[in-house]
Structure formats: C-alpha cells, structure tokens
Length: 378
Ligand code: HEM
Image 1: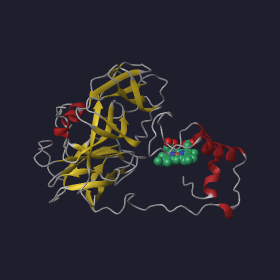
Image 2: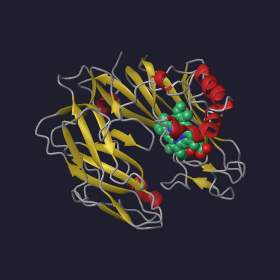
Image 3: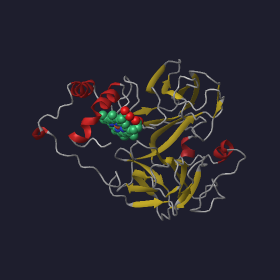
Image 4: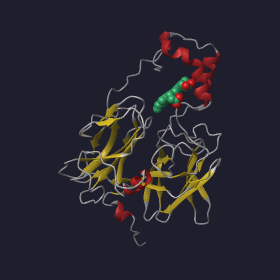
C-alpha cells in the first residue's frame, strides 16, 4: 500500500499506530544501545509519538498547504546510472510449486582491466520469486564450479541439498547479497570491491515458487570508482554448519568466533539465520574474556535480512577476537517455526537453518583474501 498521499494513508492509521508502537515498522531490528549505524531507519521516540497522537486524534489531514512537496521516487536503479550491467544471459524457468535448489549461474564479465566497484545493486528480474541472491566474484584461475558452463544454471554435485550446498561453497569474495528490503551496496569514499580482469560473476539464486509458473532473469549494476581506491573491501564470515537444534528448544545457542589475522576496518554486519532465528549478536572479546557487543539483532526476523553499517567504521587490530552468537527458537511459541518436532540442522532451505555472521572489512588495496589470512609478523 502506498502512503504517498493523505487519502491513501488515512485508512491505515490504526495499522500504522500498531506497526510503529510494536517496532514492526520501519523494519530495523538492532537493539537500541548499540551502534550507531549509518543506515538506521528506526523512528525516534518523538516520531513514534507524533504518529500515535495523529492516529489517536482521528488521523486528521491538517492543512494541505503545510504539506511537504511530494517525494520523488527513483525508477529503476537506486544507485547512480551503472557503468556496466552484468546479468544472467537467459531467464531461469520457475515451476508453480515445490522447492527449487540453489542455482549457480556463472557470468563472465569480459573485463580486460581490473575494476574497482564503488556501488553495486542487484535488480531481481522477478521480485516475487527471488528469495535471495548472493553474487560472488570468481577470479581467473579459480577451480570453484569448474564444471559449470558459462550462463547455464548449475547445481553443484552432492547426494543431498545440504551436500550440494557445501560442495558449492567457496572462499571467493562476495560482491553483494540481495534480499528484499535491504539497501544496495555503497561503500564509503575511497573504499571499493575489486573485480580482477577476466573474473566471472557467479549468481547464487534461491527461488521460492509462489503458485504461478514464471521465470527470472536478474542483473547486477556496477558503478566503478573514478580513481584507484585507497582500500579494498572484502566480505568475510563467521558461522557454523555443525549444530543440531533439539526439537522444541526455545533458546538454542550457537556461537562461532575467530581471530583477526591482520589489522582491518570493520564496516558492516549482516547476520543470517532462517525461520527459527531468534536473536543474533556480534561481540569483540577482550583477552580477559570481557565482551563488547557491537550489534544485537533482537528480535531476529527472517523476512528482513538487513545490513547494519557501523558509523563510523571501527578499526580492529590484528589479534582481535570477533564472536558471533545466534539463538534459535525451535519451540511451538515461535509462530514462524515450520516444525517444532524437528531436530534442525544446517541446510539451504528455509525449513532448515543457517548461522552465518557476514561482515565487511576494509584492508590495504593490495591485499587479497588469501594474503589477509596470512598473519604478518609484528
Ligand atoms: C515509518 C515508516 C513505515 C510505516 C509507518 C510502515 C507501516 C506499515 C504498515 C501499517 C504495514 C501493514 C502492517 C499490517 O499488516 O498490519 C506495513 C507492512 C509492510 N511494510 Fe512498512 N512501514 C514503514 C516503513 C517500511 C519500509 C522502510 C519498508 C521497506 C524497506 C516497508 C515494507 C513493508 C512491507 C514489505 C510490509 C508487508 C509485510 C510485513 O507486514 O512485514 N515498510 N508497513
């Protein structure tokens, strides 16, 4: 429902009151007290009060002459006009029902030179059916998905969907993650992602059929840095694929941690779980064991896969221990729970679970992932 004009908005006054009081809207799930985050879209206490008083007072129109000018909404790309658009070469056909395995589509970029990407956005061809997309940068010489034909949707080998997901995993850098409601990637000035000459983009597509046969052909728009960047952005992750959430457990904890091999600037955090996700936190753990929480997403909401951008970014020294802690609610009290009787393991579909804490760091522009993980002597 559009809320652009008074007549459009008026019938929703009560629902707006509820949504803002319960903090269901606007979608933002960082617990107050952490951050700040530059993309925080939550309302202030005053803004919430204003909306609640308006609804309680009969949702009056006020004086139309005082109304702000109509907002101009962007058609098409939300990033500035892309320098290059890289897309799936053909549409992927989608059935009306059933589960569709993750599809991997390798798309050569044919870039003759290294490109530094300052902004990137995925436009889903079929927004109703694209559950999420992860676009990876496959550098020349990589053996990842070597049996995949360029442009042809590919499912990695394995006996089960879980095995196929694991055999399709990679250390290649992620260009972007798309999920409904998230914002395009735009790194701060001087920071950019590197797509080396001759790289492929690999679209990992998760589709959810929704009752009607259709198709999807998604595209990524790229805006290049005008000058070489000062620093390179890489997406790293901490996670676990070895947990078993007991049936009915209301608050099952899974933690993963790692030690930063070299100095890095922490830019943003992106927690990922599925329907049993309850809360997720990122902590810095001091040598004595004291925790400093950077972000607590609580309640976690599977339908809103959001990035939380630290403002300002945080400098981390080599040796810093970063910890991600996820809590899962596999009880009947979780209305989103597909089956509280199930012992739940890691897996690709929404009725299975995941526990991944993605985070973006900026490092020296000449560093790559492999060299970042080699500890420099200090
Ligand atoms: C002050 C800002 C906002 C207000 C007052 C607002 C209000 C609402 C209301 C009243 C509903 C219907 C809830 C119901 O079913 O009773 C709703 C649903 C929805 N809103 Fe918002 N909204 C806001 C911001 C946003 C933003 C920023 C997004 C997208 C990024 C968004 C996306 C949605 C979606 C997808 C739904 C339907 C699914 C759902 O209920 O979660 N809204 N919103």
